[in-house]
Image 1: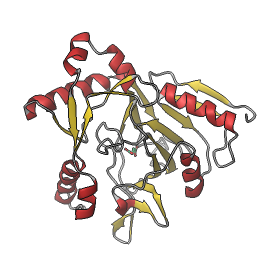
Image 2 (image 1 turned 90 degrees about the horizontal axis):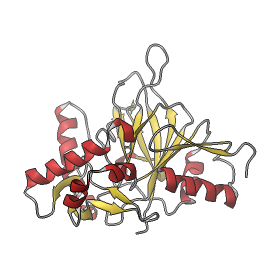
Image 3 (image 1 turned 60 degrees about the horizontal axis):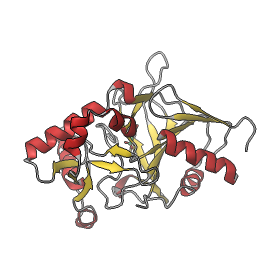
Image 4 (image 1 turned 90 degrees about the vertical axis):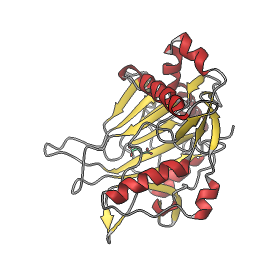
Length: 293
Ligand code: SIN
């Protein structure tokens, strides 16, 4: 293992910081195994001070599994389709990335039959206020810690329930909002719509690696709970998310350029804070590692 290699739990229900690792350099198997164990255990890992090219970012991501090509391909990085650009920067009259990604609590790719294992987000440009303080934080909540503390009556209520995750419905909603605000965004093409047909997952999902139960409904994709009246299903979803995202389950990450944060898409949810606007620029690159179960 590298000199100074250390993994320190963050002072929160989720997350650990990994020190003494250069992710652009080859990682030996023992270091990689320690990182993977910490990711499984803590749900989110932080590496500061990295200098990653998109190719190195993808190469590190591939150590954990196949890397997905994003559903919304209009924001793929030129020449590197596995890299999804999250950014408010406009060039030539067009957004170079998704400007409003993650503005409600969610996990990535929950709308897929096999949801993604995790995502790796790398900060290239971080917006700052007049005092130089970073803006555009991201919050992470532990869905395992939240499940463990869920009242027994709620655990029993959720047993055997399944929820519908629907990418198209949420996309259309956001499209309407963006266009109403005068922004531009392409409509979903027929091919994409077919690839993202609505899918059903358990409301409490066992983690594919640890087997631990996780609250697995989110505000972005869940449109109904199977067998429930629509309003009751959405009320249950909202109650679970409100419970799971209380401060005691949450870590708030304040970004700096060169931070790479990777999160597990079953045992955590995340939320991006929109407290900045141009000329405050935010540019992040994200890869998403495919799931296996
Ligand atoms: C995301 O939800 O993938 C993006 C989160 C962020 O931009 O902070």
